[in-house]
Amino acid sequence: MKKVVVIGSGVMGRGIAYVSAVGGFHTTLIDINETQLKNAEKEINAIFEKGILRMKLMSEKMEAAKTRLHYSISLSQNVMEADLVIEAVPEVMEIKKNIFEVIDQHAEAHCIFATNTSTMSPTEIGSFTKRPDKVIAMHFFNPVHKMPLVEIIKGLETSEDTANAIKRAAEQMGKETVVINEFPGFVTSRISALVGNEAFYMLQEGVGTPEEIDKAIKLGLNYPMGPFELGDLVGLDTRLNNLNYLHAKLGEKYRPAPLLEQYVKAGRLGRKSGRGVYDYRGKED
Image (cartoon, rainbow, N blue to C red; front, top):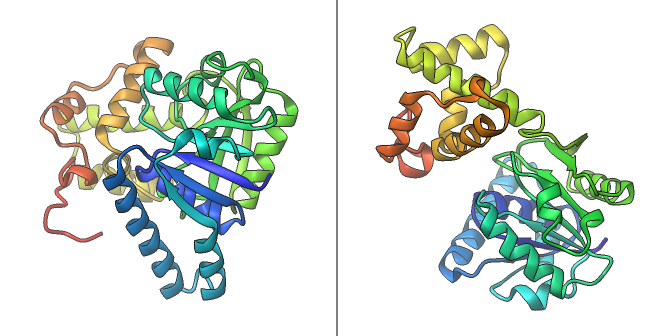
C-alpha cells in the first residue's frame, strides 16, 4: 500500500491526511470546496510547525512528509491511482452513499475503501459498492495527530485480508489499533455518548456546574478530559447526531438530554462555533 486518498478536508480529514503523509504514504487530500481545501493546507502546515517546535518531528521528516502530501479538487482522477481511500465527510448516509458509488466506479479492483465514522454501518456503506469485502470503518479520534487510537470496524462482508491491511496501514501512521465487529456505536462511541449525555442530564438537574462535573470525572475516574470539554471539542451537534442514531438503534438509554438539544438549537456547538458548554470567544487554543 503506497497511495492514500482522503476525501473531505474538514477537521478529521486534514488530520488523517497529516498522519498518512508523516507515516510515509503518498497522500492526496480531496475536497470540492477550494476555500476549505486551502484552509486545510494552512492548518496542516501549522501542525507541522508545531511538531517541529515541540520536537515531536524532525525537520527532515517534515519536509519529506510535505513532498508526499498533495491537495486536489479532482476525485475521480486521484481515486484511479489509490491503494486506499479514506472517506471523512459529514455523518450523513446519503453523502457517503454518493461518494462510495463514485469511487467504486473509478478505483482499481485492489483498492480498499475506509469510512471514518463513529457510528455508521460499514456493512451498509459496503452495499453501495461492488466490493463490500474491501469496505471497512476506520474511526480516528480528534485531534488525529495527538490521539493514539484507530478503532477498526469490520462489516458483515469485510474480509480478514482487508482488516489486516487496514491494521498495518494504521500502525504505519503511528496508531494503536483495536479490530472489532460491527454493532451500532462500536465500542468507544457507545461509552462516550452515554457519559456525555449523562453529564448533560446532571447539568440540567442542577447537580453541579460544568466545571465541577468535568473536574469530578477527570480526577475521580482518571479521564484525560471531562465530558463537557470533550463534547465541546467534538462538537455538540456531532454528539447529538450520534445520540439520535444510537437512540434509534439501541433504545431509551441513549435518548438525548433536552438541555443538549437546546444548546444545539441555540448554535452553541462547542469550540468550532466559539461557544458550547464553555465560552471560547476571544480565547486561543
